[in-house]
Every structure is written in C-alpha cells, then in structure tokens.
Length: 93
Image 1 (cartoon, helix red, strand yellow):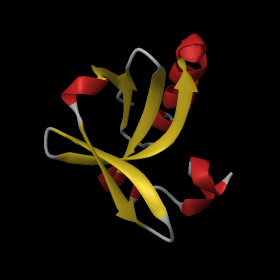
Image 2: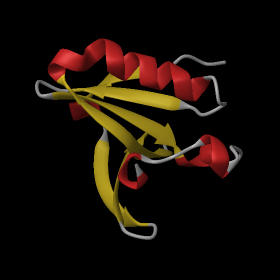
Image 3: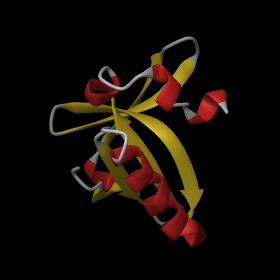
C-alpha cells in the first residue's frame, strides 16, 4: 500500500471531464485524477482518513492542500483495477 501523497494545490492542473455528468479532474506528473471528496481546512484529519481508506482498497491517492480546503483525488488509472462495489464517487453519494 502506497500512502497518499500531499501536494500544494498550485502544483496541479485542474480540468473538467464528462463521465455520466461533469466531474472535476486534475493532472500531476502525467497522472490523471478524479475528485473524490473535498474538505474544509478544519477537516484535515478527516481528509487524511478518507485518503488512507482508499489506499487500502488499492487506489492511488493524492491530497491537495489550499488555504480553503483539502481535496482527496483518486488516480483514474488505478480506479480501472478496483471493483465498482468498493468505490462510490462523492457526486454519487
């Protein structure tokens, strides 16, 4: 299990994409991610807990940090190897 890595929000490139609806994505080091969940700056521990929970399912996770929020991002490449029953994206909750 690889722990989530943490990046400053200014080091990533955000974009939107379509997957049964408009979704938030981001790119870093030629890897594409989908936004799983966003947390307020006061919910840092919750963001890390959610990130580690996803790594235990075999998903590569990145957590971005800004002045306003912590965002948990899941690697689109690693999601192709995880059964859908183990994963529910934030917009589907």
